[in-house]
Image 1 (cartoon, helix red, strand yellow):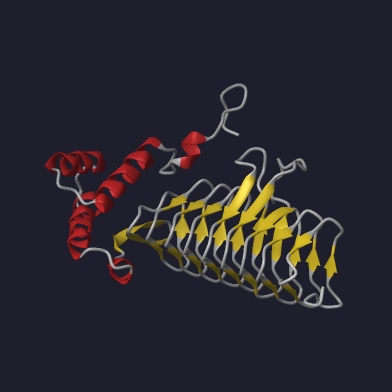
Image 2: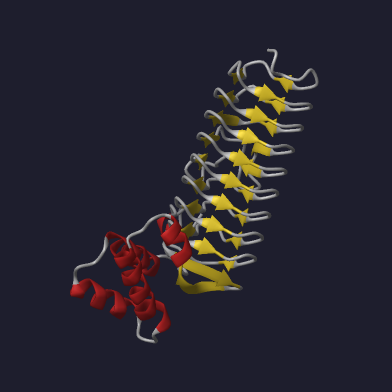
Length: 274
């Protein structure tokens, strides 16, 4: 393959499209599949059962498809799936899934993972997500489309980061981040509506005004959150974005310590969470 540097190693069994550029000192494991147009910068390691789509750019020194940093992992044949047109910067690490999760770690399309960020086992990142430098995702985290997690933020296991939300730099994220909101602090909490991001995405101004009113009643006032949710739903005429927010908050209330996905964990014999 003319696009593979002489110092790179492609293990027998790997399937790499002839158009893929493989830079110096890269390693591609025998169970790796890479679609056309992708580029691997220097010192990129891709291993495990990893399937990568088209036109992805691994800038350099990435560790992709490595085993989970989970003591319960027993070598099961779990996997990593990455979509198209992602940019994965220097020293990013992404681990495969586990049997205790969904068996798969997944990254969608058109995402930017900045330098030194980490995606742990069984995470699910949707599309058009931006993860800043040194962002750390623990296992089983879900990041919904078009959200931004700023540099140095650390996200607890089983947290959901809602669509079009904005997590501030250095935030300690211990519970779910509601969609369309700004979330920051240590421990983090909702601070306002992500108005700038919603305007950039072309959201209807009336929908944004309704979200701002919902924020005031749900987070700024001292009335119980469930009461505020019920009052908003009873008033009707809700934009789809507000309905999505209220559904998300109801799920949080059913979750464990504000993490809905953790309430979905399978229980082991004796009723203890895995």
